[in-house]
Each structure stands twice: as structure tokens, then as C-alpha cells.
Image (cartoon, rainbow, N blue to C red; front, side, top):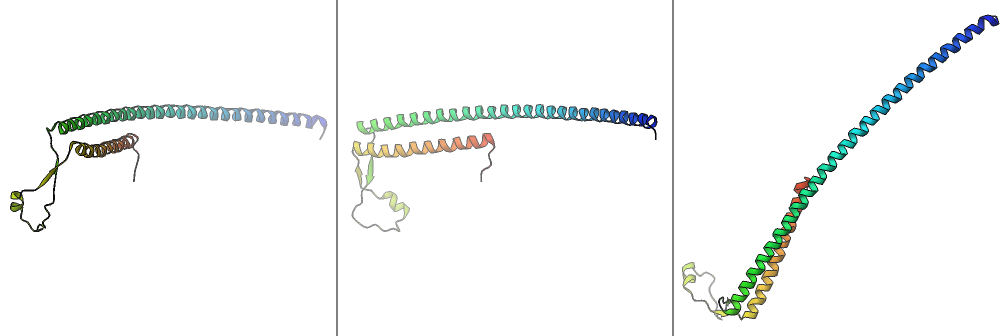
Length: 170
């Protein structure tokens, strides 16, 4: 082969390689551009989903916060009403409008098989409590009632949050 024969052949091969390389570059660039478009679309979709989820959670938080605030207000009203009733009761006990008494054992043994009609005709000995003792007993009962109201409010708050966020409990 002479130089005049192989030079055009090499030039054709080089041109073919250059054309192939260029075509491969264009294909590669098109693939990269398609991947970038897909990534941008996925990123936009994810951002939209995140924004929607954030909005939904914020709405749930506001609703739960409002419900909890209403429950707290209701508890405050219940406690205020109960305190008013206790104060009224204590005032009635101090003034003598209400008298408290407890049964007093008569010292005799009673049969446990008493019939109901006989028990209704029996006169029971009772001892009247002084105002200070009645107030102390009422304070103990009031504290227990307050604790029960607070625990019920706590249970209601728990249930509100559980129901708002659809939490599965076992």
C-alpha cells in the first residue's frame, strides 16, 4: 500500500471516527438532558408533595391546638363551678342551713339477715358533725373531684390528639 492509498483511507477512518464521536456526544448530551428534566420534574413533584403534607400537618396542629384550648377552657369552667358549689355548701353548713351527720353504732349487734321492710322502720342513731369537720371532709372530697376532673381532661386531650393525627394505639 502506498502512502497515497492509505492516507485517504486513514482520513476517511478519522472522519468516520470523528462523526461517530460527535454523534455519540450528541446522544450522551440528549440522555443527560433527559435525566436532568426527569430529576427536575421529580424534584418539583417532591416539593409539591412536601408543601401539601406540611399544610395538612399545620392544619391538623391548629385544629388540635384549638380543641385542646377549648378543653382547657371547659376544665377551668368546671373547676370554677365546682368551687362555687363547694363555697355555697360550706356557707350553708356554717350558717346551719345544711347539717351533716353520720350513723352511730348503737352498741348492740344487729342480725345480718334483717329484712328490707324492717330496716326501713328502724330508727338509726346519728351524730351531727360540727362545721369545721364538715368543711374538712368537703375539702377532701373536693380535692378528689378536682383530681378526677383534671384526669378526665387529660384523657380527653390524649384522645383528641390521637384522633386528630389518626395514631394507632394498642
